[in-house]
Image 1: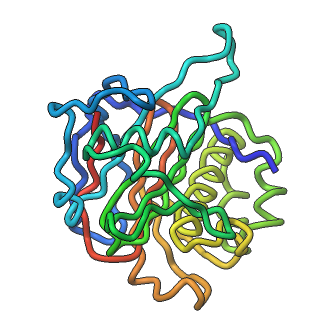
Image 2: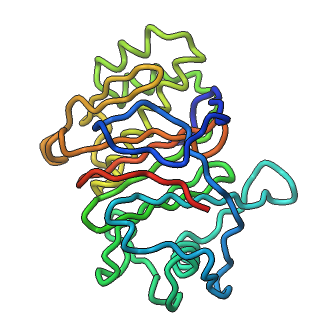
Image 3: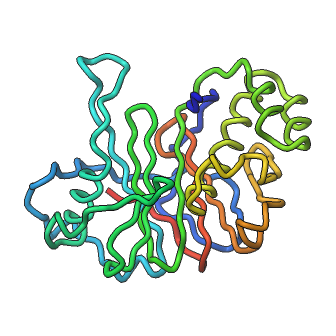
Length: 258
Protein backbone atom coordinates (compact mmCIF):
# COMPACT_ATOMS: atom_id res chain seq x y z
CA UNK A 1 0.00 0.00 0.00
CA UNK A 2 1.35 3.46 -0.90
CA UNK A 3 1.91 5.61 2.17
CA UNK A 4 3.22 8.98 0.97
CA UNK A 5 -0.02 10.95 1.22
CA UNK A 6 -1.25 14.45 2.04
CA UNK A 7 -0.59 18.03 1.02
CA UNK A 8 0.06 21.41 2.63
CA UNK A 9 3.03 23.29 4.00
CA UNK A 10 4.42 24.55 7.29
CA UNK A 11 6.41 27.75 7.78
CA UNK A 12 9.72 26.82 9.45
CA UNK A 13 11.12 30.35 9.89
CA UNK A 14 10.03 30.40 13.53
CA UNK A 15 11.67 27.01 14.19
CA UNK A 16 13.16 26.16 17.55
CA UNK A 17 16.12 23.88 18.19
CA UNK A 18 14.56 21.95 21.06
CA UNK A 19 11.10 20.72 21.98
CA UNK A 20 10.92 20.37 25.75
CA UNK A 21 8.65 17.97 27.56
CA UNK A 22 6.04 19.78 29.65
CA UNK A 23 3.04 17.81 28.37
CA UNK A 24 2.35 14.32 27.11
CA UNK A 25 1.37 15.45 23.61
CA UNK A 26 2.62 18.89 22.64
CA UNK A 27 1.22 20.99 19.81
CA UNK A 28 3.07 20.69 16.50
CA UNK A 29 6.16 22.87 16.26
CA UNK A 30 8.81 23.08 13.56
CA UNK A 31 12.18 21.63 14.50
CA UNK A 32 15.31 23.24 13.06
CA UNK A 33 18.05 20.92 11.85
CA UNK A 34 21.52 22.46 11.69
CA UNK A 35 22.32 20.32 8.69
CA UNK A 36 25.83 19.37 7.65
CA UNK A 37 26.87 16.52 5.35
CA UNK A 38 26.95 13.20 7.16
CA UNK A 39 29.93 10.92 6.53
CA UNK A 40 30.08 8.13 4.04
CA UNK A 41 30.95 4.69 5.45
CA UNK A 42 34.66 4.48 6.26
CA UNK A 43 35.14 8.26 6.63
CA UNK A 44 37.31 9.44 9.56
CA UNK A 45 35.52 10.31 12.79
CA UNK A 46 35.35 14.04 13.45
CA UNK A 47 35.83 15.07 17.08
CA UNK A 48 33.99 18.32 16.36
CA UNK A 49 30.88 16.38 15.33
CA UNK A 50 30.79 14.17 18.42
CA UNK A 51 27.67 14.07 20.59
CA UNK A 52 27.89 12.85 24.21
CA UNK A 53 26.24 9.46 24.43
CA UNK A 54 25.29 10.12 28.06
CA UNK A 55 23.14 13.05 26.89
CA UNK A 56 20.69 10.56 25.37
CA UNK A 57 19.49 9.68 28.87
CA UNK A 58 17.48 12.92 28.75
CA UNK A 59 17.33 13.57 24.99
CA UNK A 60 16.00 12.00 21.82
CA UNK A 61 18.31 13.03 19.00
CA UNK A 62 17.14 13.27 15.40
CA UNK A 63 19.66 13.27 12.56
CA UNK A 64 18.47 14.16 9.09
CA UNK A 65 20.08 13.82 5.68
CA UNK A 66 18.93 14.44 2.14
CA UNK A 67 20.34 12.16 -0.51
CA UNK A 68 20.65 13.15 -4.17
CA UNK A 69 18.05 12.41 -6.80
CA UNK A 70 18.88 10.01 -9.61
CA UNK A 71 20.10 12.03 -12.64
CA UNK A 72 18.49 15.16 -11.22
CA UNK A 73 15.03 13.62 -11.43
CA UNK A 74 12.36 13.17 -8.80
CA UNK A 75 13.21 9.60 -7.79
CA UNK A 76 15.73 9.49 -4.92
CA UNK A 77 18.40 6.86 -4.54
CA UNK A 78 17.95 5.49 -1.02
CA UNK A 79 21.11 4.55 0.90
CA UNK A 80 21.39 1.21 2.61
CA UNK A 81 19.79 1.85 6.02
CA UNK A 82 22.05 -0.46 8.01
CA UNK A 83 25.21 0.98 6.49
CA UNK A 84 24.00 4.54 6.95
CA UNK A 85 23.11 3.99 10.63
CA UNK A 86 26.57 2.58 11.31
CA UNK A 87 28.25 5.52 9.58
CA UNK A 88 26.23 8.14 11.44
CA UNK A 89 26.69 6.57 14.88
CA UNK A 90 30.41 6.04 14.43
CA UNK A 91 30.72 9.66 13.29
CA UNK A 92 28.84 10.84 16.39
CA UNK A 93 30.15 8.52 19.09
CA UNK A 94 33.42 7.13 17.71
CA UNK A 95 34.59 3.54 17.74
CA UNK A 96 34.66 0.95 15.01
CA UNK A 97 31.94 1.12 12.37
CA UNK A 98 31.33 -2.63 12.60
CA UNK A 99 30.46 -2.22 16.29
CA UNK A 100 27.52 -0.02 15.30
CA UNK A 101 25.95 -2.51 12.91
CA UNK A 102 22.23 -3.10 13.40
CA UNK A 103 20.11 -6.22 13.41
CA UNK A 104 16.40 -6.51 12.66
CA UNK A 105 13.91 -8.74 14.45
CA UNK A 106 11.19 -10.83 12.82
CA UNK A 107 9.00 -7.75 12.37
CA UNK A 108 11.81 -5.63 10.88
CA UNK A 109 12.45 -3.41 13.91
CA UNK A 110 16.10 -2.23 13.99
CA UNK A 111 18.25 -2.71 17.08
CA UNK A 112 21.82 -2.03 18.15
CA UNK A 113 23.90 -4.32 20.33
CA UNK A 114 22.61 -4.22 23.92
CA UNK A 115 26.00 -2.99 25.16
CA UNK A 116 25.39 0.41 23.55
CA UNK A 117 22.33 1.00 25.72
CA UNK A 118 20.51 2.81 22.90
CA UNK A 119 17.24 2.48 21.00
CA UNK A 120 16.87 3.62 17.39
CA UNK A 121 14.25 4.17 14.71
CA UNK A 122 14.62 5.02 11.01
CA UNK A 123 12.30 6.59 8.44
CA UNK A 124 12.61 8.09 4.97
CA UNK A 125 10.32 9.85 2.52
CA UNK A 126 11.14 11.55 -0.75
CA UNK A 127 14.81 12.50 -0.49
CA UNK A 128 14.72 12.90 3.32
CA UNK A 129 16.24 10.24 5.59
CA UNK A 130 15.92 10.45 9.39
CA UNK A 131 17.51 8.56 12.28
CA UNK A 132 16.14 8.84 15.84
CA UNK A 133 18.35 7.72 18.76
CA UNK A 134 17.76 7.67 22.51
CA UNK A 135 18.61 5.64 25.59
CA UNK A 136 17.34 2.07 25.76
CA UNK A 137 15.03 3.19 28.57
CA UNK A 138 12.71 4.46 25.83
CA UNK A 139 11.11 2.51 23.00
CA UNK A 140 11.11 5.03 20.17
CA UNK A 141 9.50 5.10 16.73
CA UNK A 142 9.68 7.79 14.06
CA UNK A 143 7.79 8.27 10.81
CA UNK A 144 8.13 11.01 8.21
CA UNK A 145 5.93 11.53 5.17
CA UNK A 146 6.13 13.68 2.04
CA UNK A 147 2.82 15.47 1.37
CA UNK A 148 0.95 14.57 -1.81
CA UNK A 149 -2.69 14.60 -2.93
CA UNK A 150 -4.89 11.84 -1.52
CA UNK A 151 -8.27 11.76 -3.27
CA UNK A 152 -9.23 8.45 -1.58
CA UNK A 153 -8.43 9.57 1.95
CA UNK A 154 -11.93 9.02 3.24
CA UNK A 155 -12.23 5.54 1.69
CA UNK A 156 -8.88 4.54 3.21
CA UNK A 157 -9.92 5.91 6.60
CA UNK A 158 -13.14 3.87 6.47
CA UNK A 159 -11.02 0.77 5.92
CA UNK A 160 -8.22 1.36 8.44
CA UNK A 161 -9.30 3.96 11.05
CA UNK A 162 -11.93 3.88 13.82
CA UNK A 163 -15.36 5.43 13.15
CA UNK A 164 -14.73 8.61 15.16
CA UNK A 165 -11.78 9.53 12.94
CA UNK A 166 -13.76 8.77 9.79
CA UNK A 167 -16.41 11.24 10.98
CA UNK A 168 -13.73 13.85 11.65
CA UNK A 169 -12.22 13.44 8.18
CA UNK A 170 -15.62 13.48 6.47
CA UNK A 171 -16.23 17.00 7.77
CA UNK A 172 -13.08 18.42 6.16
CA UNK A 173 -12.53 19.82 2.69
CA UNK A 174 -10.55 17.42 0.43
CA UNK A 175 -7.27 19.37 0.73
CA UNK A 176 -7.47 19.54 4.53
CA UNK A 177 -8.65 15.94 4.67
CA UNK A 178 -5.53 14.68 2.90
CA UNK A 179 -3.19 16.33 5.40
CA UNK A 180 -5.28 15.24 8.40
CA UNK A 181 -5.25 11.65 7.15
CA UNK A 182 -1.49 11.80 6.79
CA UNK A 183 -1.03 13.07 10.35
CA UNK A 184 -3.22 10.28 11.70
CA UNK A 185 -1.27 7.73 9.66
CA UNK A 186 2.10 9.08 10.84
CA UNK A 187 1.06 8.93 14.48
CA UNK A 188 -0.03 5.32 14.11
CA UNK A 189 3.12 4.28 12.33
CA UNK A 190 5.39 5.99 14.87
CA UNK A 191 3.69 4.26 17.82
CA UNK A 192 3.56 0.88 16.10
CA UNK A 193 7.22 1.11 15.08
CA UNK A 194 8.11 1.87 18.70
CA UNK A 195 6.00 -1.06 19.85
CA UNK A 196 7.78 -3.29 17.36
CA UNK A 197 5.04 -4.87 15.27
CA UNK A 198 4.56 -2.11 12.73
CA UNK A 199 1.31 -1.50 10.85
CA UNK A 200 0.65 -5.25 10.67
CA UNK A 201 -0.47 -4.93 14.30
CA UNK A 202 -3.63 -3.15 13.11
CA UNK A 203 -4.21 0.53 12.44
CA UNK A 204 -7.71 0.51 13.90
CA UNK A 205 -6.38 -0.53 17.31
CA UNK A 206 -5.45 3.09 18.13
CA UNK A 207 -7.73 6.12 18.36
CA UNK A 208 -6.64 9.76 18.22
CA UNK A 209 -7.97 13.25 18.78
CA UNK A 210 -6.83 15.66 16.08
CA UNK A 211 -6.83 19.46 15.80
CA UNK A 212 -4.93 21.65 13.31
CA UNK A 213 -2.00 21.97 15.75
CA UNK A 214 -2.27 18.97 18.03
CA UNK A 215 -2.66 15.20 17.99
CA UNK A 216 -3.46 13.18 21.09
CA UNK A 217 -3.71 9.43 21.69
CA UNK A 218 -7.12 8.74 23.26
CA UNK A 219 -7.23 4.95 23.32
CA UNK A 220 -5.23 1.92 22.23
CA UNK A 221 -5.24 -1.86 22.35
CA UNK A 222 -4.15 -3.35 25.68
CA UNK A 223 -1.12 -4.95 23.98
CA UNK A 224 0.28 -1.45 23.46
CA UNK A 225 0.17 -0.70 27.18
CA UNK A 226 -1.35 2.29 28.96
CA UNK A 227 -2.24 5.40 26.98
CA UNK A 228 -0.58 7.56 29.63
CA UNK A 229 2.76 5.88 28.97
CA UNK A 230 2.90 7.01 25.33
CA UNK A 231 4.33 10.36 24.26
CA UNK A 232 3.97 11.96 20.82
CA UNK A 233 5.93 14.78 19.20
CA UNK A 234 4.91 16.18 15.84
CA UNK A 235 7.69 17.97 13.97
CA UNK A 236 8.70 19.25 10.53
CA UNK A 237 11.65 17.28 9.08
CA UNK A 238 11.69 19.44 5.92
CA UNK A 239 9.55 22.36 4.82
CA UNK A 240 6.10 21.04 3.97
CA UNK A 241 6.74 17.53 5.32
CA UNK A 242 5.22 15.87 8.38
CA UNK A 243 7.12 13.99 11.06
CA UNK A 244 5.94 12.10 14.11
CA UNK A 245 8.01 10.75 16.98
CA UNK A 246 6.52 8.38 19.59
CA UNK A 247 7.99 6.68 22.60
CA UNK A 248 7.30 4.78 25.79
CA UNK A 249 9.44 5.75 28.72
CA UNK A 250 10.57 8.82 30.65
CA UNK A 251 10.20 12.41 29.37
CA UNK A 252 12.82 13.74 26.97
CA UNK A 253 13.89 16.80 25.05
CA UNK A 254 13.67 16.24 21.29
CA UNK A 255 16.59 17.78 19.44
CA UNK A 256 17.36 18.07 15.75
CA UNK A 257 21.12 17.79 15.21
CA UNK A 258 23.52 18.28 12.29
